[in-house]
Length: 88
Figure 1: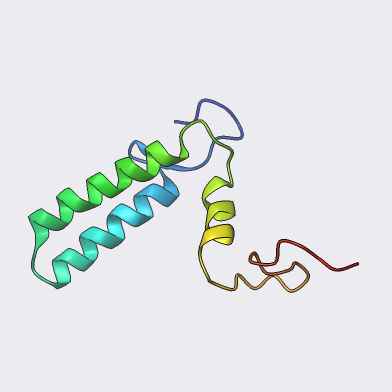
Figure 2: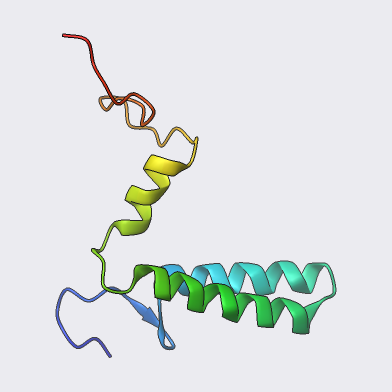
């Protein structure tokens, strides 16, 4: 149950994005027939994501991904993250 109106969606005790990562890791581990190891790794990954997000803003992981991953996020009007100085 959310404590405030602006709280993100929850699944069990994790935020939805954390739960999505945990479920994806456990699902992949079921496919490769390593259920117990995948469950442990999924829970550890969920806890690590939660610890990384704690005390920071709502879009912290998206901003971090923009700056450190070499993926084009489909933003047409913003410059690439590797351009730090502009001429002009």
